[in-house]
Amino acid sequence: MQARWLAVAVLAAAGQAWGFDVPTRMTFRDVQYDVRSVDLPSGLRVVVEKDATRPLVVVVGVVDVGGSDAPPGKEGLAHLVEHLTFRSLQDQKHPYNDLLEVAGAARWNATTGWDLTTYYEVGSKDALDALLTLEVARLARPLLGVTPEVFEAERQIVKNELLQRDEQGFVTAVWTRLTVALFPPGHPNSRPVVGTEASIAALTLEDAKVFVQKYYRPERMTFLLAGDLDPAALAKSLPQRLPAEFMDAPASGAVAVKSRLPASPRAVEEPKSSRDLIRVKAPSDVPVVVVG
Image (cartoon, rainbow, N blue to C red; front, top):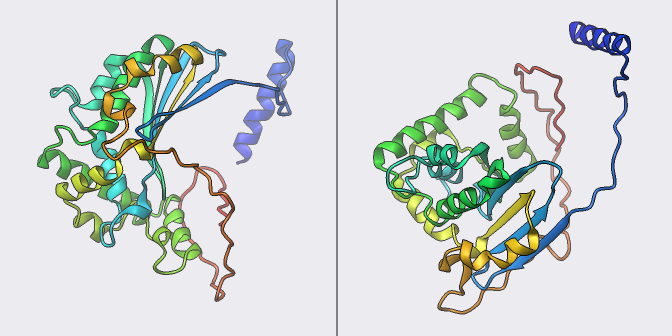
């Protein structure tokens, strides 16, 4: 830590010698964005946001499903499905990761939480059409082309991530312990999003297919398109950019898009018993405080 402070001091001194001031405080600008939201008869919501400060765009696909939706004993299923989507063959030939590179994505990733699975890609503004087409295809057919061999390979990767967190004592293991401590036994969120070694071993490709069929549906999805783009023109051109299954109402009728936030917050229950302080010893590059 002393060495890092020394480096900062030297940098500050150099900045003065070179004739510019090193910023020492954070400033906030009053920034407003052109944001438009379109609710479609399928139940899909599309949010378009203009930010022309950089010639970049980001495509985000959010699915209202997460670790708390996994069947008992199948913890980690939502996270494994997230991994598998990157191995899908949307063109019947190439893994999704390769298609993102060809489309011009500069960065991409995904995260799985208790209630949401979020996918995103960032690229130049000229890559918007290609990135949106790929993300729509991925969420429409998350497991297209995923074979039992690919499934097993990704299951082992997820298992290794779990072992890295817990057995190696990395600081990410804190989140699993915190989850168990915060929620009472039996609560959906008391189960680890990444699963356990036993639950991951119990997962099958058929489990993933059933999970996707149940949850990866337009009424549980939100798309965010943001960056250097024209919100009005983009919102108007959605019928040409989205497949009919994402645009049109199902046979049962139009689906009303639900509010993503509750009308009123739920009451927080007081702890029914005191708990001992939980200590997790783990290597960390910087001091970390986790409060729940």
